[in-house]
Amino acid sequence: MATHKRNGAKPFPANKKPCTEIQRTRQRLPIYAHRSKILETLDNNRVVILVGETGSGKTTQVPQYIFERNRNERIAITQPRRVAAISVAQRVCEEANRGQLGETVGYCVRFDDTTSKDEAHERTLETDILFGVVKQALRKRKDLRVVVMSATLDVALFQKFFEDSKPAVIQIPGRMFNVDVFYTAMTQPDYLDSALVAVLQIHLEEQDNGSILVFLTGQAEAAKMLICPIFAAMPREQQMKVFEPAPPGVRKVILATNIAETSITINGIRYVVDTGLVKQRSFVAKSGMEMLQTAPVSKAQAWQRTGRAGREAPGVCYRLFPEETFDQLAERAIPDIQRVSLEVVVLQLKCMGIDDVLGFDFIEKPKVNSLVKAMEKLYALGAFDPEGKLTERGRQMAGLPVEPMYAEEALSVVAMLSVESIFYSPRDKKEQAAQSRAKFQAYEGDQTRVENVRNQLKGYLERLELPISSSFPDIDPLRKSIVAGFFLNTAMRSQSEGSGGSKTAFKTMCGRSEIVKVHPSSSLFMRNPPPKWVVYNELVYTSKYYIRSVVIIEKEWLLELAPKFFTKLAQT
View 1: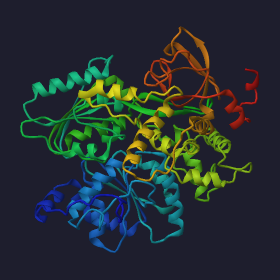
View 2 (view 1 turned 180 degrees about the vertical axis):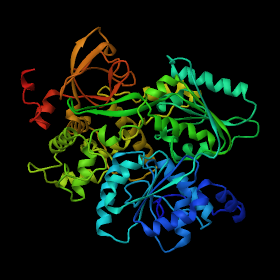
View 3 (view 1 turned 90 degrees about the vertical axis):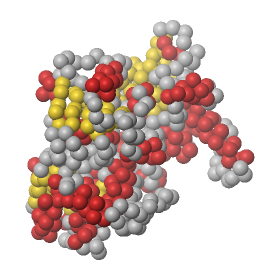
View 4 (view 1 turned 180 degrees about the horizontal axis):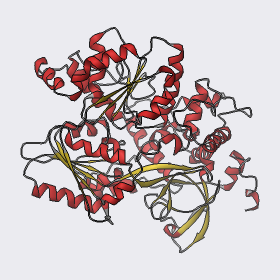
């Protein structure tokens, strides 16, 4: 949320509700009783750590309290997720009654320098960098005030990190309404099936029309049960539908990933069904491989999910796992800075003029081996010179809102690969969607299938006589550019259990070798004969390792584009 309007954003109408009604709603929030204390504490302390449980009103009210006291102050708030930033900005604009969204209240969803941190427990790479930069700014700017807000914050950790500023801590009382928690008697072998059964039981047995919020692990699962899904890759217009009230006599069911754990308030939720799982990326420094896998949530995440049911009335949370399993969960989730690959972190720090990456003041230090691996990869990509200084190519990489490996690819394909899927499959039109996808199958692999989609869009532009910036009549330069960015994700055909591509195993070439197979969603899954050399965009682990977004390459390209890493290939 910022004080300027996002380019291209449609203006939202000014609030038409009577101010007295809005004021009464605001005054009923638990945080309202602490308004004076919050402002007084902020006057006397440069850093304030505010811990308020779900439903306390901290996200929408604290910025307004500060603004109402001094309208000349510029207030910036970070949210770790796009949908949260947009929905909170809309709500604050409505409550403040300050005209259209984009005038006094607005939002910006990419690359915004901010000074007030909300949802600090969501430890993304960007927020951890931001904490370090803000700490440096506090040393230079005496007028700066920082408010760190969260529902599940590790207070001691943040107190120690900001100890030079002697932070004050404010605790806001708990949830507005009681939430009963129920566990299953045993571990569920199929959590998706169990979630469906729980939803049906709630709908049939509970007489009210309270909405049901179901936490799943990913987009694919939400799409399978498609009722009212919300996930990060969904278009904004569809995300906003979860905030619309259900018709009279109709129960709304929201299928969500962990995007719905924090910040966003979906009215009417009375029931939460928690699978206790989350899909997350993990980086193994020894092998240099990053994989996507399903993992248990932490206790803090589980309580955040539970809290969704108690914002407006007493609620119920059904946890689809035994209480013994909950007792064994980690207290808090491992922050991204200690779990994922760190190329983006290193590149951003270098661009900000911070050359001593290993000595940067992180709130929690990442593994040294992970930082070294990131610097090695960035050097291989041409982002650094031999002395570790940022090159012009590195500055260009940092200017793109994607990971450095994507910078070598054609920008049109980069934009498509940076989302989870370029294809949309409506539940009631799966066969038609599959037929449409088949038209874009590409012999060379998945990224070239993306280019086929781009070419179809280009055809529309040509018929409309609109300008086109570029085209790719020869697919080899595109595949070479993919190799230039993803040569560390090379795999060689290892063994064949049959004649079809689905039976073929590959061996990863960099770091510790792993035996992998092409994911069934890939256009190369059934290719016969299977290719000998491929590069992939993503490694996924379920019962075995799969590679996704796969493209066929030539061995000679590896020798040409990454000779330092593939000097021995000439003999294979």
